[in-house]
Amino acid sequence: MNEGEYQRRTSYRLLLATLWATLLLLAVEGIGGWATGSLTLLAEALHTLIDGFSTVLSLVAVTSPQRQLGREVWGHGRSEVAATLILCAFLGFTGISLLLIALRQIWAGFHGAANPFPVDLDTHVLRLTALMVIVNVALGVYANYQARSLNSLALRLNTQHFLADVWLSLVMVAVLMAIYYDQRWLDPMFALGLLVFMARSLWRVLSEQLPMLLRPTAIAPEAIVHLVTQVEGVIRCQRIRSRGMVGRQVWVDLHLALHPEYMELADDIGEQIEALLRRQYGPLHTHIWIEPSRHPDQYWDPGLSGY
Image (cartoon, rainbow, N blue to C red):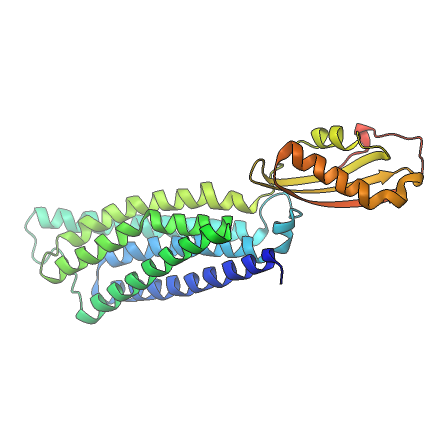
């Protein structure tokens, strides 16, 4: 097993463990919130749902070999788009519903209504929620450590997203303890704050992690053609694809047409082109496809290149 395959498998296992832990926490928060009438638990469940979606996006990026090779489609797949739209619609509907309920409870509390905050936390729900939060935090810290050593972009983005709001989960546990000791007014108040952070968390996933599944061009095809055609024996360079970030890691896929007299030197020309690109753009991984030219006197024409 090479180093790249080891990194991919380790990242996959960590992300899968994170997803299962997130789903368990989501189930505890959702069922516990519904059973006890806690708006705080229900709002935090929405926040946890976004964490789960973040992990799924990272799993898609890790498990798709086409994405790792830089040959994925131009844009998101249908399943990714559909999942994003469904998630946004569900979060919008549920979030607005919780917002209205929280405002109604706060309004009733200000006007001295009888039992304006109907939350009734159970000891078992409180302990189980606290335990699952601790497990998720520990797993997130460990995954963040592994992301640095594995140099996995998908794992790093997922752990950064989780750890950015990890303090919110710890504060939520403290608020639940206060609610358990009859500070019930905190339930709708803290739920409102969680809804605000939920919107911010969703925006962060959509703006930072979802673009990871796109295939933006890292290097202009014309610039690659200009370098490659300087190598002796190269007649045409076409079907150029590149992704990644220049200076960190770039994947390049291109097709070459060589003069028939240079076909015996195809391996040397490929190594020369890769060294030339690496010297110009830094770390990169290339897939070069070479074929003899049917018309040796025909040099590269911009109209012939495609990508």
